[in-house]
Length: 85
Image (tube, rainbow, N blue to C red; front, side, top):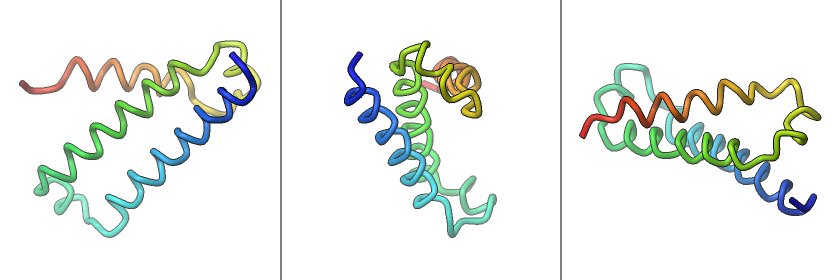
């Protein structure tokens, strides 16, 4: 994967985190819990974040050891397994 492609993935991850922060920054935990649309939107963004993290090459992940890559990858799997249909 090219350096440009990796940069695009990382920028996408940052944007996703900013979107989640924007959705939730002014909410109390109770407001978040009571707003199904916000919860669904955040859930979708977390899945996007996990999928994007999965696409970052393993060798590159080693360059950024402060990022909790495994937690991001496990989070996506956990979210997908616990979606209520």
